[in-house]
Length: 501
Image (cartoon, rainbow, N blue to C red; front, side):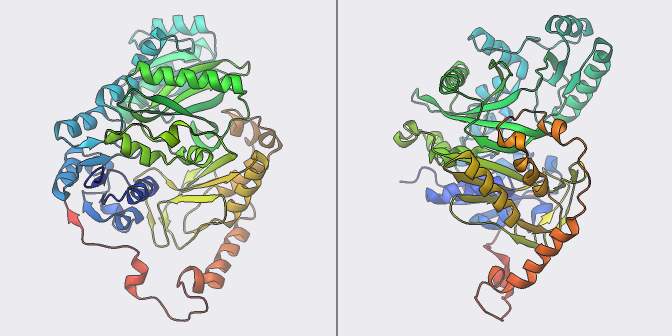
């Protein structure tokens, strides 16, 4: 008997494809939703059915709760997987699914609401003895409160949005005279990004590491962690390279942080998959940061070192099953690294890039995985998050994993839009990265004066050569074939789609 009759994937690009692959593993049919901008998208054709849900604007398509629910109802879905981003951490959407008797493959609305508010979650975790960074316990409209807390914590401090993440509404403040403007600017940005201008202040840790623990909890009282991921290589508070295990954690520290992550899950009444994020200072003290009540972009590296399919576990837990025995006994094996491939110019301050993918080639081989939402002909627009794919490698040691990732990135080819793979290759080659001395301001510290890449044209020339040299096998599929493919062969998977305006 199937766990669910059919699952609607309320997302797009690589994460939608990833969820659909897990559904195939379980023999569950899938439904994709797509906007005007995603008419030719990979995820639309990867599903068994697809439903058009409106214009390119996220608010009129992927963020429209009523359209998503209607698409599920129209296609006979009894479950929805939200992926990450969009509606994945929206308690209103989770509650709407509950009201409609559609299983939401994520935590409960109550847990999402509690943990989605950084101030409320800090208060809850403080009562459970979870270590917190010194700062405000609640938001306030009174600037005097911010001044008092900042003076007590000591500068620098950081202003954060209570209802958000991803770097939105964040301001680092180095002195008292900067505080008022920073609070005002953070409030404006938070209101624009999350519809909530609540912010708070906490101590800003200098050169911390960003360490997160993957958690799983089921409805049978089981809660556990699947070890850590180090996510310290970031640009503008967004991760671009992640790895596991972390070079900073001793077995004793890993055990203590993992136990704290499980305490967080139990305190919040958590079920399904999630991530508890910590900051680790230079003295080895760690502090609770937040919980992401969803699957993380970087989940594949945990899968690589544990052998656990986290999306399969999510679906099984949502169906009422306990965490599988193989997952409960999983251990860390080897080392894994993930590099995110964004449509942005790594040689020009990560400036966004858009256009049509003219040629696409993924690396392959033992220990290499690519989670991709694109193929040749895909349109990359400015409407959505610029992530196109993720390259993941797994090897017995960190040194071998670094070498394998550098080779994989060199073999990864995408023409038509810019990306930051050369930037990431240079990070992997940096001696401080090789020694494992990473922290959240690594890029600002070691790559502040990075010059424009003068050899970009050469790199493009190599990729262009691959188009003409490899087209018979990479595009047309037949070794030595000289016949052009039919239009149907170039489309990929296809099916009749529904449309919901």
